[in-house]
Image 1 (cartoon, rainbow over the protein chains, first blue to last red):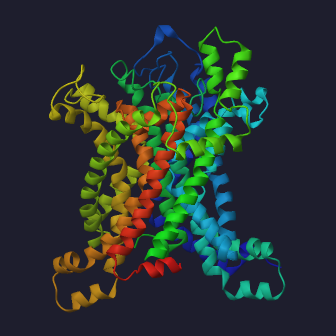
Image 2 (tube, each protein chain N blue to C red; image 1 turned 30 degrees about the vertical axis):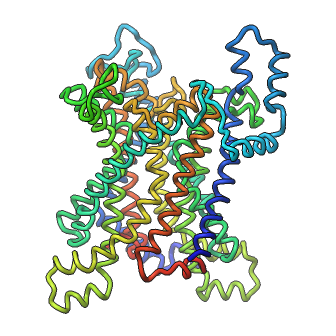
Image 3 (spheres, helix red, strand yellow; image 1 turned 90 degrees about the vertical axis):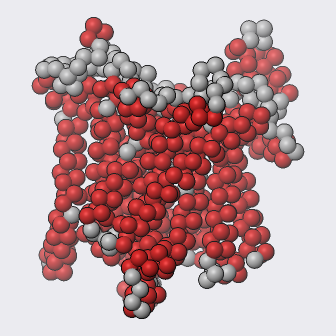
Length: 307
Length: 323
């Protein structure tokens, strides 16, 4: 018995995918860039000890230092090393982006599969809800969600007041508004797969709906899920950064690219360089995810890409 | 046509009702409550007074009853008082709404006026240098955080060049003519325009691409019309149609943009008002502000539906009602 990977069609498809993906130079470059950023963020503690400075150390005698040999990108208003804080901030921003996008993809896929497979009233109801969520003024709503008192929804005080909770809260509230694109794409892909022969055959053999959806439809709608999820990581990082910037997301002293910019506007005449780096990291990372998503779309689903 | 309108209107009202309950619930879950804040700021009030006040204002009732009381009062025209301003909510909200409409109106029109030619130019010569350049620009546009863009613009125009004010609504001390106030609009409008430009350009391009693939475009070419004639006379008009919907559906995103921009530039509009009221625990103002924003978005969608059917002779209201 051969494994799935040895299947000749599969190998050919994979080669085709790589060939198409490699053609998209920007996507390839973006992928490499993202791996580098992720590695730097992951290795932040090692880099920290190699550089011999403490990223959390406040040094009020050394505020607003310009880039120098010890502090590669200078220091911030509390005399902390900007370069190391950017790396640690990257951990948070990437973690929130990846986890929230993954969670949103699961919600979106479930809703898209159900709507596409069952059709009729359920479809109409789910898609109207999706349209409703898309049309909402998302940012004001997210701000309210970020301000919700966790004690009032029954979360124990010890957890509600712990430092890590802002991280989970960010992931959660962004995931519950970020699933719409995936849901729409999965629904339309499901619609086109639903009436194909192998689905009919499975139905004729008496397979239950959840089995048909999980085993027969899902594997055929993976491409749009991957593309939409990659693209949504970018927009999620943007949302996280703006909420953290406004002081409602990741709470200091934990650095995130967004909250590193919170004081930038007041300090703009004192230390304009501090306003540049975190924003540049957000911009570069988000645009890289968008290019990557674009390249994946070209490679996985050539018909759907911009002709 | 009337059936269609009635149906859509009913749908809009239902969504608004659901949203009002959700928002009411969420606002109720925000830290503190009005009476606790009153007690904290007034040492003469005892806990017993607090209990009595809560009972007086119906705050001890279950959430569904409280919602019902609020809803009946609101429908009767009583939207309550703002805690921080000590004035009726609507008195605060309406002037702010006017300011936001000015900002969003100018920014949207500017963005559309630039996006259409850009998108169409890209679509007419796909994969040309122009198209690729515009495509890069769009990628940058959708990837830049709006608040950072605002910081960079302040850094460039207000701090480095010193030619424009970094924020506010008008000259210090009030007064000043129309043009003095105009100066203060430039940076917020610029930020919002750049923020929405990329999205519109992409839609304009996609829409034009779709139109250029149609049979009547091929026929027009076959008749020997020039590229210019085909594009302007045949394709463009049809490409404009889907854009009406896109722009109207983008209302919600515009409000998010307004919130960021207004907060960054200290522009006294609805976005900043919503943000400030949420942070200041001004429950009534936050609630009504959010509802107003939702209402405007829903009305925008409703109008888009009507406009779509009204502009395109191929779509009748009947076919829409049957959907």
